[in-house]
Image (cartoon, rainbow, N blue to C red; front, side, top):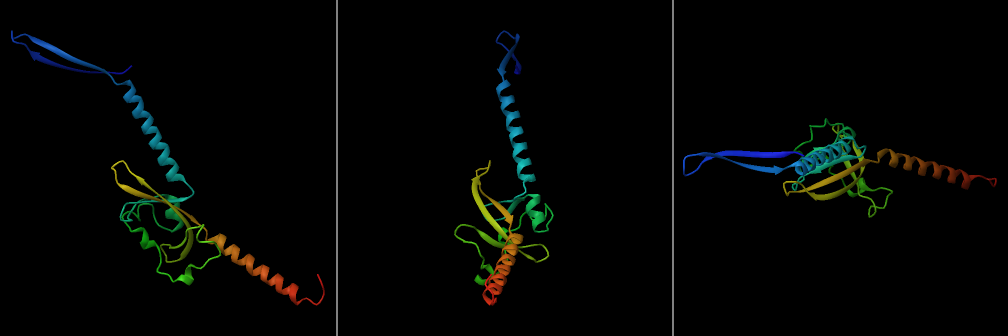
Length: 173
């Protein structure tokens, strides 16, 4: 057990010095603090090492934290995006630029700009939460789907060529 002791001398009416002591068992508090620190360490490890890009923003949309996966996807350094508005990573696009083969009611597909100006298609989801200071924050979870979309376009093109060959073939296949 861990005992906290606070002792203080005090002079009584007769001039004698007496010592008053306060004893308190702080074992449970210490154990709870250790568990909280371990939990925070695990949480940070999961967020920092997640293959999914994670961006924490304040109420104004300013980036408070971006994990290495998010930063590397957009070719930024880990500490480079802090304080930026998340919306500054979205290009100015037209509706036709955002046309895609996915049902946008089921997926939150967005286009984001890399540091060198390239556009990447991202699947974006978010969750609001209250941090330890009582401030509302937004956790954004981002997955690069650019390669998937390009593969899907190539597959559709290949299917069309095959269908055209079949339709134009004089012999039944």
